[in-house]
Length: 361
Image (cartoon, rainbow, N blue to C red; front, side, top):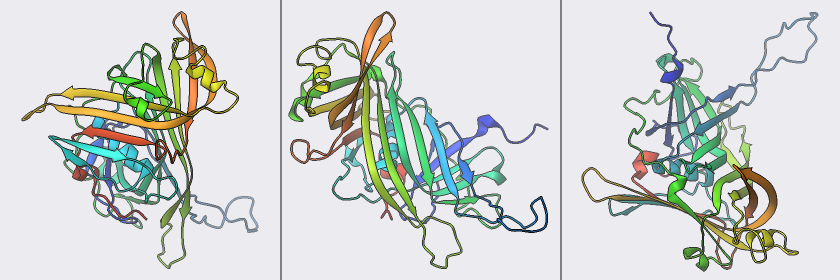
């Protein structure tokens, strides 16, 4: 008999929670890679016991529950878990023909409630599945590669509770793994070949100010500080009871060819080297039309836009040509843009597929 526990049989299953602190059955399997890091923080007491070696048993402390996961080929139907897991807001899609439109416009002057997720991880050994609750994204990196291939994603998940199908004191509830979930083998991927970049001096200009023959690659970085709140309520549990969000950062790094839009007087590099910071507005737009099985084509698309100011320029090279790498940070613009970031994703994932919108914490 083969030894149980096959790497190739690992699965990553998520479901958005309607309520903070209540784990739910997963609603979707995702083609992610990586493993959770479950640190229970067993600690030896610093006591004198007449021995050079440990005698007194260790005790548990608040756990550190994370999962660094990657997705090498981002699908349009995987965009909502990224935007909801990072920005929160209990967003739900709007039916648009035979598609769904997911819109995220995160608040800056107030705090959106987090969207929390239950994560199921395991393999063919069903008595050894983890069930992690109240998951949010502390950081996300989305990269469009040189060569125009599919976008890739790096995620840093943070969780507030842990259970297991093989645990006596922390049993899974509901039972994991959720049966009947499989990765979508016909998913429509987000390719850089289907994308374009627009940069303008105003939001209105993002409809027309396309920068052509310049963008080689990009990385969009989303980061946030999250404070875990635990209160002594007699629950006999280390579970996180709320998250306190802190500083948020939205950064776009683009590698450009040296065209007139990028270098020279009046260019993007000129804006970077200005004596005073220059407000720029940037838009990344992707579109891929796919034939539906029983209806008209689904207009898969992703429209990202934000106000931005340049902070750094570095020099690069691709093949025999030099390149310019410009990095900008999004800022809250309460005038022209009326916000800090906007994402509009059109796909076929409905609310039930992600998990029902909840009340946050």
